[in-house]
Length: 101
Image (cartoon, rainbow, N blue to C red; front, side, top):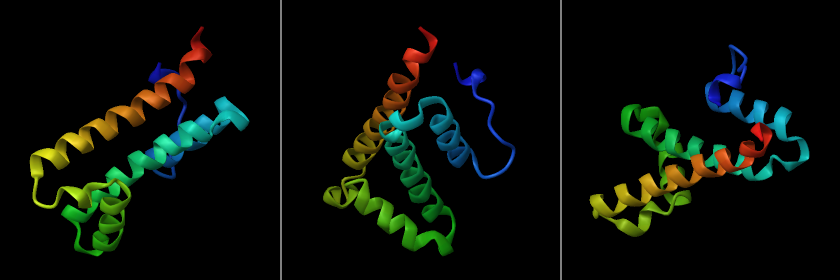
């Protein structure tokens, strides 16, 4: 299924995915866009761990993803994050699934 996406070479893969979803789904792309935005938050969170300059975005992502409630419960935060990623990917799959029927 993902092989059918023809992403532009520039703009970042999540930006390209969002653009392609707009092209495929038109006015019905809002749910898929929200899922891509969730994946972007996860990227921002990871980038904040790797790059000092991304700290502010990482903290905003941490709050938006609901990770602040876990404090130092790393296992709980990891489970929540994994569940969030799976839900975002499932949403995208559900939205593009009817295109293959």
